[in-house]
View (cartoon, rainbow, N blue to C red):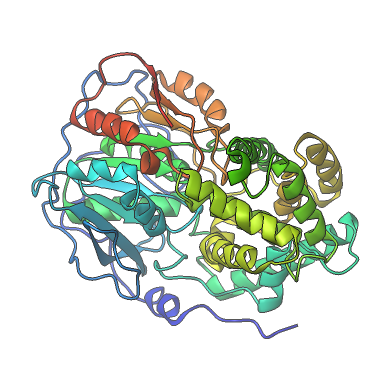
Length: 515
């Protein structure tokens, strides 16, 4: 077994610092209620106010500067970076860690405009998601407001964690695949690695090993609000970042001034239900990809058999015939490639070409995508954060049955999704956050059935939450392909701008934007 890697120097130092919550002003009084999870409580009122508050520019801004080591900003966009110390434990703010922020603006962004706060949760660094927006049609929102991305603690560049061994990382990245391994052996090997990783990360991070879930992520956003000295924030939650935005609303009462949920995940769902939603949703996105590529005719490298070709590539990965890539790595390569590729013909064909080449024995392009996927989606901090948030973990003896059942329903995604449940085997989880009892402002929900990271079905799990809270969101359907509706649709960006300017929105509650 390789020697266990210790936490990064930044974490070791900052967790030992004494200090108090950052910011000149603790903000307005909280709305009383029955929240949990280490933060202020949620509101107990049952109706959403008719008029949302006006968002304000920061009273005390961050010290914005260059983004060291980052790729060049898209043409016409200014990207600036800053850091801020945030309490490791919001209930006991004696030590801090460093949270990284990236701000995007353009020449036309009004100097007095309130910034909007963006989080992608554990899906990928929020700063990377912001670059996706800044380089796509959604950048039109920057004409109205700057957008500030909050990288989730524990992942680059917000005090990244380094607590897994190389062997554990490899096993998690391959979901336990070794030469000749059947499903039972994969489950056993993956469970052993997950348990070992839990022990090592707990030892490294004690006593703060449970301070990387959504409660902690929400507290980092609250630290930003305090620093800015503003009464409310406009929040944009992309994918799993919607859980962070909803948790912030639950924990910090009336401090949510706007709430945009872009292709949300099912807040608070247990591991089995969340996995089932993800498996079917991502399968649907991959089928959509194959169909849209096939519709290009001779221009599609996959032809009209895209689903079958992807299945062949995954089978080759499972049997060791994919040049060293496992089936799990190949699927992550495809889904991440689609998540970040432009929503156009060139974007479709670039990912399709990598798949087709791998099927014919040339795995270079797919390997590059797999490396990108691991860098963006499977860092130690993301593993710790995901496992902190697991609710109702699935027993190891149940996973083989889920592999069989889910693979029948979702041939491309079922095996991988079921096996991925084992990655948090043996981990302790943090206290779950109760959903908001009310929403200070009716949410705006952007829907995309073609999201290859989480799938587009998570919003179904939010309907009971909205009903119990007495709120009716405005929903916008976008029938495209890729990660984040806002990043890819000028129409959606326009609706968000209207929502920020005046909530509740006038007009229909159910809307659509062209892909």
